[in-house]
Length: 410
View: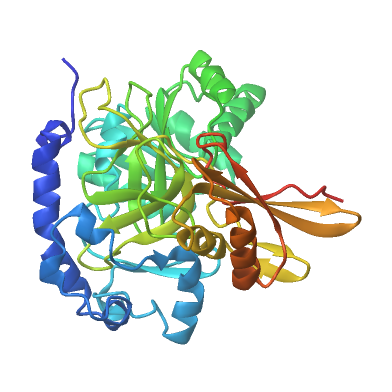
């Protein structure tokens, strides 16, 4: 029998959906006590948001906009319910984007991800995420503490000192980036230091190629990964089944067409949008800028929540053409004005030493003159001329790209 963190992970999906939908009105009303959310959700009646379909009608808050919003209304753009002076910690992520940490025991929802990776109460865990300003180390540390583990605050750098701590304290678990655990093991081997106590790890913050996972497994360290964001904590995590990432029980995840807030069909690649129930720093439809796709069915490990394929690239594909920015939202607007179009993709190339745009659009039965009409709309929306090619449904790649910059580099 497969072991799980709690009964929430294996509940009936309909029961989970009903429970989360029932929580939405209260969570949104609570968020709107903060001035930033009152502005963002102006005109929204929280009582009306009682389903995923209703949630999908709310505006997106783009993570890429937080920098400007926080500059205009420091320190958190008005999206914090918890006053800054009552927070546990105030973090600064690259950008810089600032985040408050509340006093909840497992504020980033990391405990169940650690449990899925094999961590158990009484384990000693070596944490190699940075403890300097950014929240990653604290998100994972709080999860480890909630699980009942002791944590070595290794941080980044000082590899020799970290190896001394590992050799003496003999942690069984590792938290950090996948690259750094390899550095630790390689350095230990060269220096003749003992890192053999490390048996499992939960990694994030960088890619975990199959080759690196296999190499480290061959050296006795089994790695699973999680997808985490500073504003949300752990969004999704791997289990021993290693078939996609399971969405955290504390969140609602949508996959939307880049440049829009519209959910895509299951299996289509789109932008990850997340709603949290964090009472201190709630997020309602935060558009992360990351690409992923929903996987069909439940994980073989028995956890029944939605699965995503993990990180599949960036959704913010804004590019400059002939000195003007072209954004995914503009491409989406072109498609919106022509209902016969399906998936679209703006391809940017070079022709006769000049930038050139071609909008490729799926269309089942194009009417006469449709391509010309779409080209006129493209010029109206982007202020740039571009060709239009109508293609058969299903012929464009399912990779989430709305703008493909194919110009040669250099």
